[in-house]
Image 1 (cartoon, rainbow, N blue to C red):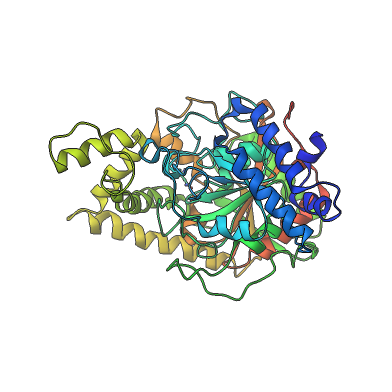
Image 2: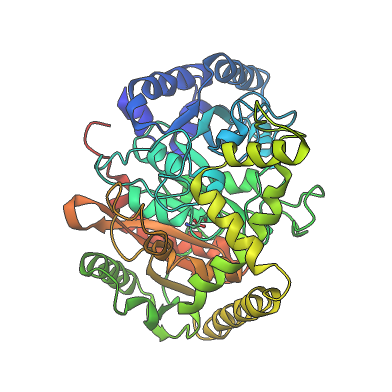
Amino acid sequence: MSELAHASVVELGRLLEAKKVSALELAQHFLARIEATRELNAYLDVRPEATLAQARAADARRARGESGPLLGVPVAHKDIFVTREWASTAASKMLAGYMSPFDATVVDNLKRAGMVCLGKLNCDEFAMGSSNENSAYGNVLNPWDEKAVPGGSSGGSSAAVAARIAPAATATDTGGSIREPAAFAGVTGTKPTYGRPSRWGMIAFASSLDTAGLMTQTAEDAALVFNAMLGFDPKDSTSVERPPEDFTRHLNDGVRGLRIGVPKEFFGAGLAPDVDAAVRAALGEYEKLGARLVEISLPNAHLGIPVYYVIAPAEASSNLARYDGVRYGHRARDFSDLTDMIKKSRAEGFGAEVKRRILIGTYVLSHGYYDAYFIKAMRVRRLIAQDFQRAFAHCDLIAGPVTTSVAFEFGEKAADPVAMYLADLYTVPGSLAGIPSMSLPCGFGAKGRPVGLQLMANHFEEAKMLGAAHAYQCATDWHRRVPAGY
Ligand code: GLN
């Protein structure tokens, strides 16, 4: 039966279409696997009744003659998306047990396409982190190696797809939280252009960066699910209004003649030799497939981390001001007056990393520091974005490593926030520029841990990027590897 769980979204859609399996059977199959892999701690909330009801509804739609490649295919959601039928906590004590009165647009879009929700996935608290060690509900284990982190902040999403306890999972990327965990867990993680997915109902971290995306086994699956998931949403003021497009349209284009830019700054000191070797081998594969590699430069990319750690905390400090114990979220039990109630509620509800970001953010936005830090960071952000525009004059896509090393160990960086922040060295520049990017499994490094290849495209060119990823996945089988025991 594990064949069923190992099938991709596209394959499951075909099985459903051919009536070889029902949505209900699929849901039951995945729920049983979730139950049997509880020790991974990938899921925060599983409600079989709600899942089975959605599966029955999908089967009923098919029985009425409806069809669709996603109708009845299971999906799980990162606990950053609010859901009516499952608790929405952002992996924070602050929102323990919170039931949203509505579904996030992304959740709703997938539900309308007939996808069946398996539950909510663990992550770093308010999506702040690179290892999933900041969840108030415990670490998620990496199915490849339980000593290794699954990456963050979307660690539940990456672990769930890697362990085949969800064929696809939503995730969010603010500075790397889809690509880094995808690389660490050996799955395909795709972040579209900022503004393409709706942020409505996505619990806010840094609003100018937060982008919903997917963890899947394949690029083909991501393209197919994006067709249902992405699109203009009048409820989100930064949603981009563009005609709907078919993200699968370039899947069979191949890469002959494609110019792939290789940023020289991404291969310097700090890149572990095992990751370097796997990424270079993947670039070699692209050459064999007919692509042309061109060296490019992103001279300001190294400023990405300091810029990001001014802008993201600034926006977070503002977004998180809403958790005051008054309207929703945790409220302290004992307090003397309103100010004391707010102080205690926030002190008790937020974890250490979230507090650190609120402190940094409040600092860089305060009078006297605003120009020195926040405005300066915004200016450098523009320079980083311009680097990409210059580079894309010479290439169609950009490729390089996702992370400097394979997955690190639990506790290895937890006491050193700066070391943890550096995990996003190669992902943050693309986030600041708002361009689409993804991580593809491209081999294994030290201790048999997965390595990711990063692809980046210019704004709104995710279909081209997914096509190049699909070409690689047709020629290699790294994305088909499953950790032992799953
Ligand atoms: N690791 C980065 C951070 O902690 C990115 C997180 C994210 O993309 N959500 O901010």
